[in-house]
Length: 99
Image 1 (spheres, rainbow, N blue to C red):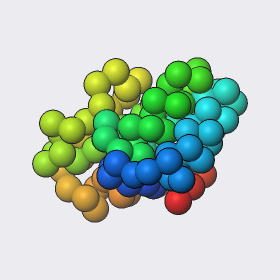
Image 2: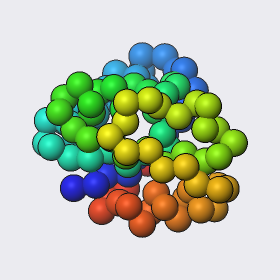
Image 3: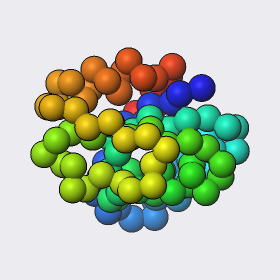
């Protein structure tokens, strides 16, 4: 299943990162694909790392002006022209959403 997760690119404390990491491991162990904003920072990185390290796939949907922050090593990285296209692509590529 392609599961989209909307979350922060900010570095946050353990009360946020620990549940995010545990959730990411469940996604990866379940063989799911993470569809996310494509960033390699903050909670986005925590979840992407957890999914990838647990055997899941990564599909990043970034935007042109954030291209330099896009995660390298994702299974797929889509770069959109603007935020509206990014949001539409995130939704179109997902079977379920988690916020």
